[in-house]
Length: 115
Picture 1 (cartoon, rainbow, N blue to C red):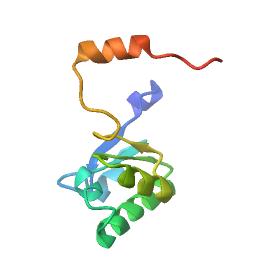
Picture 2: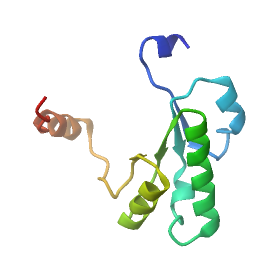
Picture 3: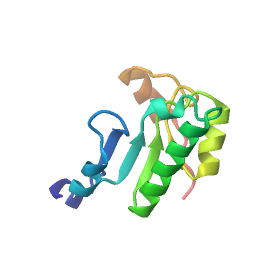
Picture 4: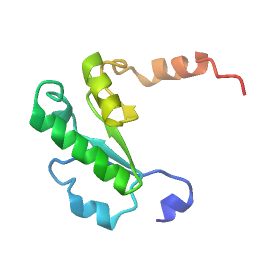
């Protein structure tokens, strides 16, 4: 809670797998739920995976949290997630990992929108 007072956002990583369980949502003031890549992999062709992701997105909304989909690798995955109401995502479809030096250069050369 002290971190939140400083303006730090908290994310529950790998939600739905391992130790990232529903009980943590009651115990900690998370801002984001990160949906594990294992749920995103087959989301386009697997009804069960799609239903699980939709349920996680609905849960996030009900708890006034945002959701981040991990491991987006195709345009179809991205489009389906957008249709489901997922506003944030990460994965190879957006870009491959880069070193800190390259990321710094990319950020320093990024154009900022006019205010």
